[in-house]
Length: 239
Image (cartoon, rainbow, N blue to C red; front, side):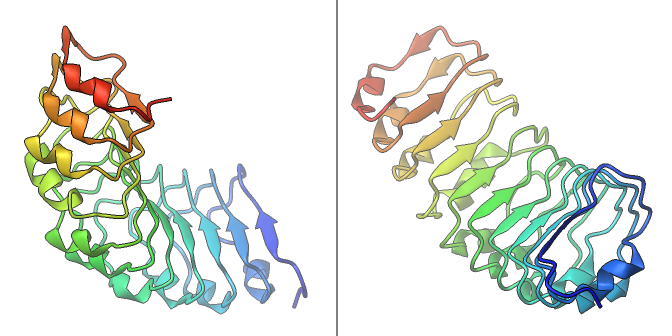
């Protein structure tokens, strides 16, 4: 066994699996395997009981690694830039997860189980294929940052029916979504500090935007705007 090692960075190599010696590092809290050639995880990963963060970004994973659910200390999981088509695991086992990145995959549906991640603070799921969000997601009381840019199939009306109940939400990213008009219930997101609507197809900024009085950063760049509502003057916190 290798005692006392807390963090191990093996990123940007050509590993096709996690090296066996890693499983002997019982004290390991952070494992970075970004940009390798992993296609799956071995069940031995469950031996790393102290793991709090694992970065599997930019590998060749085709399934959500169910084994990680056994790591009861896991707080940060980065699965971005892979080829994962679904989240077909029991997410209730990821009870301590605070930061989840599943962006840039091929995910076609967000499961109702996402609502069981009660400690989740950051959720990044841009550049996927899902059209809407499960109503259970409205129960994520601690969610502060939600990224959903680059989702070509997004039904904005259905999405807003869910996220307007996220009272803890502070940052919302909806860039690159071909948005032509904002839903009227955007005014319910009065607790937002930041909203990114860049690279969409907005022509008019509606009056409802004036209800977001906590906003200090509003990104409307690269749209087709020809008119901005006078109510934008209500956003006195804009920096």
